[in-house]
Length: 497
Image (tube, rainbow, N blue to C red; front, top):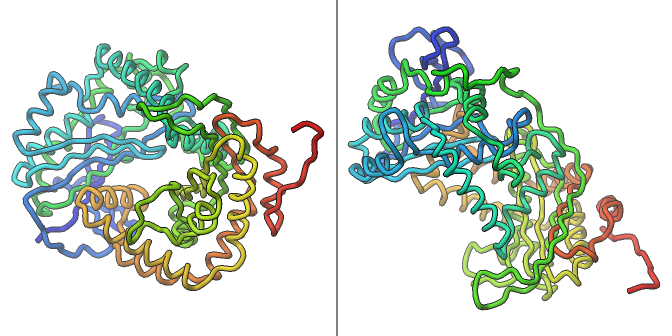
């Protein structure tokens, strides 16, 4: 039996070393002078069965592109590429990977707009070795000039690859966030802009790490090991450790400290005109597509309407024009039934709900041949407006059941449980169990769906468009259609076709 454990670490401002603080779910702050590492109870710390011989452990950090307002965008992208490079103990990435292989381990580092996660999975018996490697990677990276240059080339290659891919979803998500949160927090670029690739250097990286990779912004989480084992090993390798970026003050620029800005939803439009007629990754040519994304402000994951927005997202569903079908694919969602099923020229229609600490973005991505772009906009806007209209019990129950099923199925995977624990504790200082969300989903009603739909429809739309855009309606027309109960676009006549 074991407890899913969290250790929250803070940095001593006087000694510049990592010490530990006890936080509990009630928010009470216990003494930080304890000689042993305390833990954060997960609402009520119930023991769980420990299945298998492997565990997952990692560190989640309040770090990401939303905090780069005082820096050139792209620093978090560089940190992702620089993960698991040379440290005080390991000369290079190969040594780290070879050490992990001895313990049947794998590693990963992934960043989002608000979180950077370092994680490892390995044999539970090798927990001390894994925590030691994790401590080296998180707190002791060397960030040599050669490694920064290698990361620069990796990012250049990635940017070229993104612009060649027939499915430009990462770029579209960049554009819609930039339109929704113009020049602030969540609207700052997650993918390093081409003009910044040559700007980011070791001094910028050290300055950012000094301000944002502090222990009060970190959570060490583990799944699949004994409670006391994690606490003991974490105390050894994360206690009294001076981060490498604080060893040379000359590499740290004077700044005002961490940015605490709240996300400001602005709405707006971003258009990227580009010829996509020859985008193909193989001998079979892809159809030329124009992409349209419309977004509206939803809510943060701390908001009482968060679960209702998640259910609305499942109710809208969507996907590609071709699907093999099968149980749980969402073939009875609105975007499949009302859009893809009825309009053969529609290539894709998918709903997304992005939830963050202080805001959220509900959006629909659709694509078709450029000649049909106006019709795409009309169809998608009508579906968005209809979310505030009639909602039937059978479609609502189907959406709730599918969401509950996805929640429980995903949490069968140990790395997903780790990320769930780490992210929840990082954001809320406690973890709500899966049953809480399962029950909250079951309580969502038709009135809840209408209420949150009206809430998002009252916000200014964010629009992102990519491809050949001659048929794209004016922003004002789209905004007007969203305020129209029928979702109709204003008719404009021209002598020229």
